[in-house]
Length: 292
Ligand SMILES: CCCCC/C=C\CCCC/C=C/C(=O)SCCNC(=O)CCNC(=O)[C@H](O)C(C)(C)COP(=O)(O)OP(=O)(O)OC[C@H]1O[C@@H](n2cnc3c(N)ncnc32)[C@H](O)[C@@H]1OP(=O)(O)O
Image (tube, rainbow, N blue to C red; front, side, top):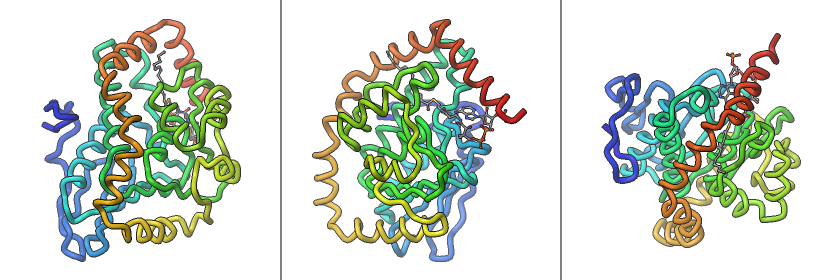
């Protein structure tokens, strides 16, 4: 069982905490990894690196999200760690965003369960007391971009194929208000208005220009840069930084928290529409045919 936002929920079959590997790292820190979420602890530095490993594209399936939520809960409750570096173990892809197969051809109860998990991961990341640095080492569309946007600092590897943005409109769907709020808080209203309507995916130079990321570095420097940014942030006393973070983010998070159930109902009725199902299926089909 896992605790999701004060609710105890049963893990679905296949997400078995018993399947975790729990060993001790060289520095004595407990190392834990689920199937798809690798955690590399550096207890001495107080930093854990989370590597997303859900090949081929780190799409955010319900099982993957559940593992990630549990992992974040553990780290948040472990006083050893003050900072997380979020990165990918899948070459060339940070995350392809929400798993389209979770939003296609399923029933309303499934859509509701899935959307609650999407809300939960966002709340966990956005409101984390720890310093979160995204080391974006691959393409990062839609939900992948959203995860990066929850972080306190974003470093993007300099490769024109690593585009980042909220491209929902290109799929014929709409970024929910809390995706939009997170983007507006990051790049400002005018840039977000344009980016959201056009579903823009920014290559590194443009992503830096618009403020979607804070730094662009050569690919082989992404982890060292994330570490050096982290040490700068960790030099600030935790209580002062955490209260400031909360002051900056609470209103945005509360906006969702207050409307959580209504947001789930909106999602379920929107995604269940025949026209939306058709758009998503066509998009998925195009992705599959791209290779042939
Ligand atoms: C009014 C009220 C409104 C309420 C809310 C309403 C609506 C809900 C909004 C929901 C918000 C949605 C957020 C999302 O995140 S939607 C997902 C968007 N993601 C994308 O558009 C990315 C799609 N993928 C790609 O562009 C590329 O795959 C890539 C990430 C750039 C990687 O390219 P490449 O390395 O060339 O890999 P492939 O394209 O060949 O893909 C490999 C296999 O992976 C499958 N795939 C890719 N992305 C996804 C995905 N997001 N979900 C599921 N599966 C995915 C792809 O089909 C290939 O599968 P195959 O091997 O079986 O062919």
